Length: 288
Image (cartoon, rainbow, N blue to C red; front, side):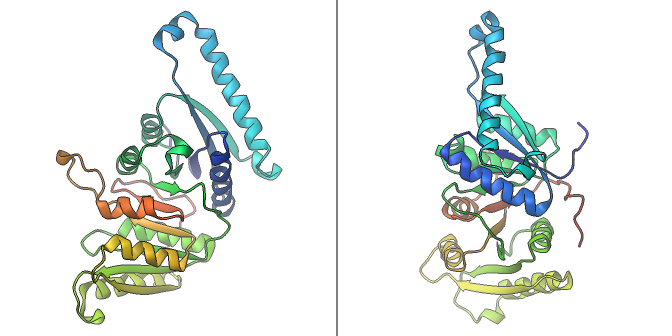
């Protein structure tokens, strides 16, 4: 499929939970200058009904499309409507979203991480993030999104940060936001003697060369798990966005993303932008 540029896929059910997800999707669409593809996934009819009543299947999809359009038009500002496209798909959310990510055309996917918002269980959501061909933004329908003045990047010194920094650069320039690089020390040594601090300072220097305001925070995991410290820091700072790299583990053991990443994504009320290991093009207006 030919790659369509500057598009966001947002899974938005026409429900109370979907209203907040739609507003967050509109917020990012407006500030990033992208088009928003609004998806609603309905239950797939049984094979018997599809064969015996094929017209009813079409009618059901058309009714769902009309309902979704009415829902959105009652919420979205009129000037946004021309940048919105609607899609009705049938089936289960996970395979539908993975197929769309593989087909291409979307810079990233926006999905509510709460089962009540999109119908994905926790393990299914983790599979979506690890297997998606494009980044996934995990949303919380209980969070009100109205600004991005600060972006937090949790850094694991054993993992690559290149792609994460590219997206951080993109979002920071779009929102004129400050970046906070956060790393956790697992041993009780002087901060500036640690590899974590030295690596974080290198990343800070790289971002500052790109004209981005940046700071480094080193936390010490004394008696606490690393993800707990990161979540406490995020809750205290209340950034507009968290960007994290999926540290994928061996599929041999059925683990798709590590515990640290999963805990951050599911424990954070702010949007979390998960960058996968797969090579995916940056938006066309991206500049270093």
